[in-house]
Length: 294
Image 1 (cartoon, rainbow, N blue to C red):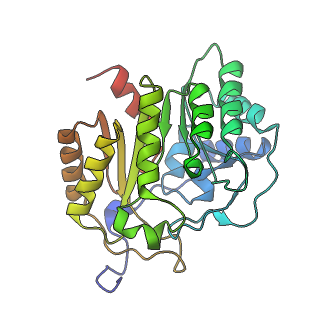
Image 2: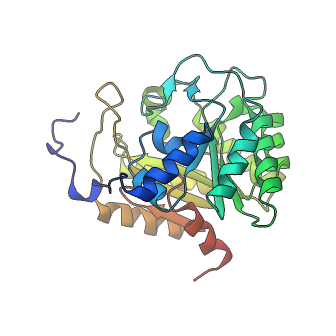
């Protein structure tokens, strides 16, 4: 599958280094508070840029995931016990970094009765309480909770501003890329959020370059709009190692721009589409375009 790929990554996939003093200060703060970030655990190519801006995506509920997605570098291992002090530490980090937009995700915790939904709610409440004066926007990137409607309602009741849940790829590739996930279940989660709490913005993301076709991508975008999803991210898949699912193609910036235009024509309120786009990349700017349209 990789034979046609160039020997080196294309120029448009080269991200900035994360070794300058501001990046290191952000990393030290997160370590001091014993917090995990998806930026580091998932090897995000934008972590240098984000740390430089004193922002990060917090990853709660430990660093070990109970799912076996073939694209992800987060550790697959027996999970740790839930840390009851984690919500307070996340809230302290949001305050110390002076975040106006806090993004909180997690590993998938299928071992927990509610999939970690109550812990998500506790983190949301702690961030709001500790940062009441600043009133940051709160975006949560949640797992599917195995379709548990009560668990989803627990997160909805905590009233985050945005609920994000990624479909990640087109349905044909789920058995190879997301073998423990269900495409229709992810769509239903997004649709249910809007039925229960239409004031909450919903968001999803897909990766390109896994072997999907253009028609499959466009059908996935139509499915997401059918679930009333309003925000979308599309980015290039980059295999973390040779042991992970292989890259099938490098998608050009021009093709990402075309996907953006087509998604906007379908009615998405905001679309971020580009080689280095990730689910929480430039999340604050994306939300601002919704509340302060250009």
